[in-house]
Image (cartoon, rainbow, N blue to C red; front, top):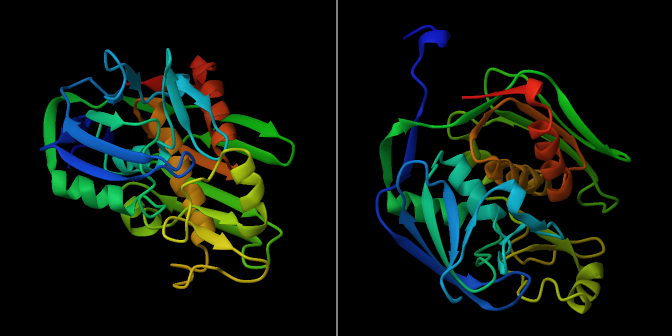
Length: 290
């Protein structure tokens, strides 16, 4: 093996063949259809609204985030694509850099509420290595953002690692912590299968706000007052924190480069993770882009 400083940078990758999925949008409740297609080097992950005139494109970059209310919504011009985080997490967790995502509708299908169906779709699509080096952002100095008791920070590390803690008053969640590297398939094994979750007491208010209209026990874990409403229960006692880490991977995937560093967060959410990326890019001495 070559010494670390002499190792060749990783190559970009795309999928080998087109694949498609359909379902319902979690928040819109509308039918949603997506086709993933191979893309050339340096294309990045880009969404295309196939149902709109002129097929506008929306690059999967944090600069294009227009809403973080219970999901990550991207926008460019008048075109938006909602609830992108699970697919972007699956692409980032699979180290796929260039994919054309053709979307019919304003939102991606929620599938089963996790990234596992997206990972299965990507496995079906196969992988194609490309010649160009994959862009990387290497953390050199700590960067941190805070919002009351919440914080998120990036620290130097030899590999990509994430660590987070959540704290809910619900008796079946409470305070949960988890940390994991993301270097050798850990995303698929440890995080991809963890489902999004909500609370029965908040469902009516969400619907009144036009959110969660496509939600069901088939695509979300719902916590009742003192029980899990899903007949099959949880996939793991700490499924909630695992899903929060999944969401972090999806938001980090909007950096447009593979990250080398350690992320630590207390009570994470889409908004604070994206604020952290903005803070990072606003501190040029804190990272090196390769």
